[in-house]
Image 1 (cartoon, helix red, strand yellow):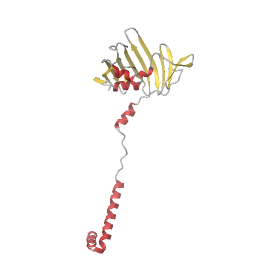
Image 2 (cartoon, rainbow, N blue to C red):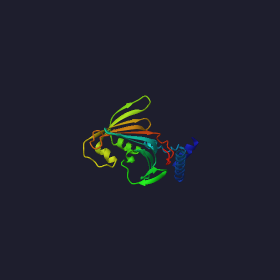
Image 3 (cartoon, rainbow, N blue to C red):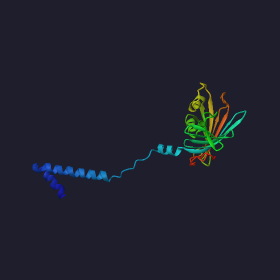
Image 4 (cartoon, rainbow, N blue to C red):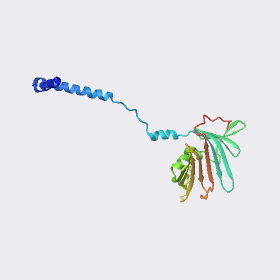
Length: 218
């Protein structure tokens, strides 16, 4: 109290008023500075969407592609890691790395310029693009936390993702996705599309569990 009384007396004294005010301002800024530095500094919080995106990144998996129509059925089995694919098709083994395609025969790799099927069309991340461009229809959830989800996509939206010429037709393609942590299986029903009239079934296994692909192993 004596301290406050002394300040009041100094403020009334014109000779001491300026020096007293300066002292008051100095103390005020010291207190503010101390409080600011003592406040807890929060670490930057990573955006939840960024975290989810990181969890969804898929770089490796094993796959089985089955393309069936009324006449025959084609199966492709392989392994994908980053920019590498090792797969069997029509009884022959192929290897693809950085968009260069090879046939593997007699323990040798020989570059080829053409294969009548584009393995990249069924890449996991391409399938994600197809699903993202589709319209949700319904979902069935199961007790093991897996689910089956039905979608529909316009034929031209589907072909555009695969870099195939559009048709300008109003045809919707049913898509069924079975998933747990990742997509386990997807079925794309093209039977209403006159050009292909097939059902594509893709199964994925060992997602993000492939360390590397070595040619000469399956």
